[in-house]
Image (cartoon, rainbow, N blue to C red):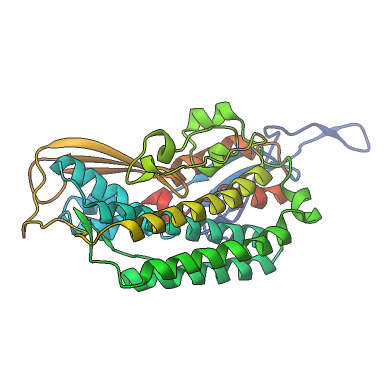
Length: 394
């Protein structure tokens, strides 16, 4: 069978194969199986392909194959003006659209030397944290589902709908919010919206233990995740892994605290870390980060209520041109570090906009993590990497 087929055998003494003797003492050739997981497979969260070499049921090597979903977003940036590229940028990680918009507008505003109104800064921070909770809840619900537990996803979606209601009210969108603009926000927040956000946050915080109690102490969940898929700190640093996955391996890095942007410099950002580096530690970090983000959201609401009325955006020319030069903006997105390298030649479109997406680096490390594990553990490890395929391929 040719490479790329759903199942493929490499005949002969393969890597990791051992000599087997038959009844007459003669050596028999063993076979390594090359197994393709994906690109169409429920556990891959989209069109991701893993090419596994198996010795029996144990993985001897793994190769992530990406690019099946490539849409050429970076190239499209070059023929769209600075208002239009926000539409493209908020789609590569469809669970974190608001965070994706932020990186683009922050880079452009830095090039323009533009100061954003304070109300817009705090509203952006609030919406970024609400979007972070929405992203984390999706993985907190879907990960147990991949291990056979169906109930948690219903609880997670109940909380998501509570927060989606206030995000939809302010932006009109449920996934692609398009509420950021260069210089601030699309429009003023609705009257009474901050109070409804505070109530939504309180409701989610009150009901979050329902999800926690279902999963964290579950014997089957512990058996499938504890000590499985251990990722050490050195490998994290070599591959540029970031976000909750890196922090679960003891890497204490969070841009919101270490290089503050928006209003994070005025907020007490608690960075959640674990040292085990296994699937269970990654899940724990994600769960704890939801609680931290809910606390940050409350702090943002309090500050917005104290602020006097004022503008939420800057007046821009009809045709927005960015001065010639280049800059690099990076943000702590829900999945890790997102980088935006903007190069301008003084025109209304970017000459180059290079994206550094968190999921790309986080998935590449699978080649180091999967070997030595059983095929049965592959899904548990893959799901704990919390990636979005669009964020890999861009």
